[in-house]
Picture: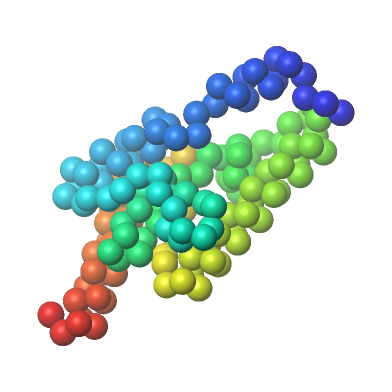
Length: 143
């Protein structure tokens, strides 16, 4: 079954960058004194961008939408064109796991933040991980 023109038009208007959730998380991280890059590839040979990137400590943050990434709490499975959407969402989940595995193999930490998470709590979680990685690096170089 094909997607209707109305559905196609509605989906094309969905933001994939600088969403409200992503911006709230970025503001909270910045307020906490963290500096980062946005929409960058952690690995140059892998065509996947992190929403927020802490390069020196190799932490890549991905803000995942509940619908598009199949949130275990909030995912809904459309009844119209169900097979297409199930394949699409399951493919996104598989790609997310693959991305996390590729990053881990290269020494990166992938952090997944769901769109439904409180941005302040998510920022605190990310900040703790970034600070822990910084401490590991400092210890390794003898600082």
